[in-house]
Image (tube, rainbow, N blue to C red):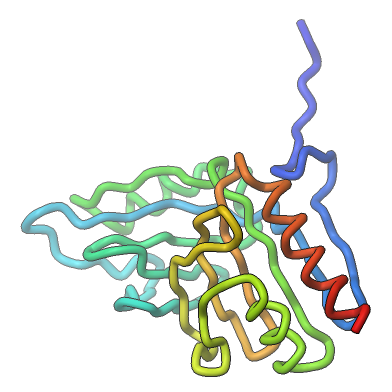
Length: 186
């Protein structure tokens, strides 16, 4: 029997991490993701006590968060639980809803600025068509980043998360790291 070794979305044994000046990029390999969709006639649940957000919003609770992905659809996040059957646990809190495991289909890159909001907004303005100055904490949207579709979540003033397809993890990381390096060179 072959010994299988787990790999992150960036094809490494440990999550990717790089600091470029005051910017830090971290692959969040421990983030569990599950999609939740209402079925016709089903009441909107409050999984883990979380009130599900409306269009363009992201809410967080105790180690669980949710972002709106479409009418009656959300992506639910659970920090540090990617190795667990998070979708099965979520299903218990969302009876009658469609719940699908998503963790292995996505890569999440956390972008943090140690120099405040302006540097983070300058970097992201080179990559996405979002006015980050008007896109404050608690906001989330789907957008294009180079040739990829992704979700951008404003977790705090100095913290943005980018969720992209796992199959494009290397390209997403390269785009983010290149933008950070170009800012540092200026």
